[in-house]
Image (cartoon, rainbow, N blue to C red; front, side, top):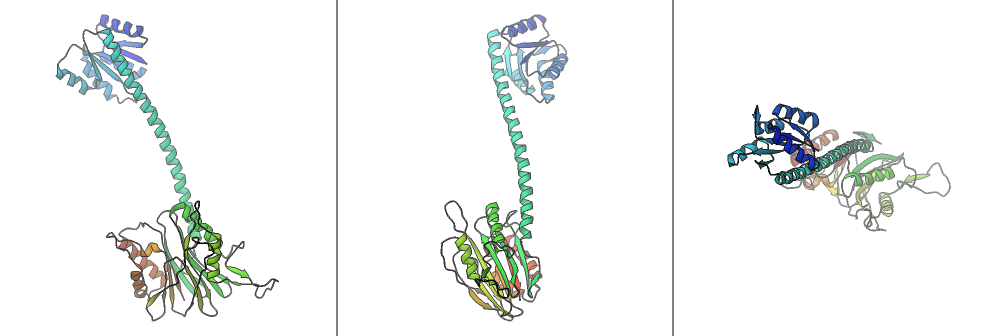
Length: 405
């Protein structure tokens, strides 16, 4: 590191230059402020020892000009002065000086002050290196975060593609839905699909937890429950030991599907795999619904001309206890009836006061909007939940599936 000596007195300047060279320092010298500033910029000088009084300006002016350069490196400045009053010290510090040494200069004192200044510069250098590493790490993290955000956005699009079409109709049964993940991805998922010529399946499920892990689990469950998946598919069961194209397959019962899932997914110390689900099978010939609820909020049935009622069918969540026996309930439906399936993100949605939306408020909403098209019901519930919560961002995943018969 080079040290610049700024001194208009030739003898004093020569004495300090030779002393510093004797101590092993590389030195430059200047006899005026202008030359000093030029050397500092050209040679990136980080250490300056300057006299206070000089022709054409003084040491404090040099300090001010150095600080005004806003250099990318720090320059440590020692002012050499015969002024010992406190006001001069304050003036020098305000101008940008780091240290002072009194005239006549004692070489031993000058040497230790130079060492002290070099320690400061070494610390500053280490700090710059740390900041540079932090900046590099920050840029890498930002780049990684952009990749993660992009991948999450793509995954969110893929997850939405697993959902049924908006205002779809299957075997004369119309559906619509509301889906609002609390983050990019949701642990909630649902579907509605034909199983065979006279049976329609549907489900809504809520995986424990939030974020990527729960979303991946819901992806897996969606794949397993998809009627297009042929491997180990619990939706249908072979009845005959020999091929019979007339009745080769019929829909499995809702309880059989949930039992199959419980046998396949069990929570242990390494994996939290449990989830709640409502699974149903609609028989369009007989006008019946076989409905199995496993830990999920009770479905809400709105019969034409009657109050909305909750369908109580309590079973344990899937994946909690092996070999659990699941039961289903039979329902008879008629034209004009509606079935609401929803996640607890709706009923447990909190207002700013902390009050939950609640199941009774949802039941009354279903009755109030029974005259509307289900697409309008979905829109109104979306607005109602946002107004209740006081924001459009939710703490839990929101999902609702309406079946209109």
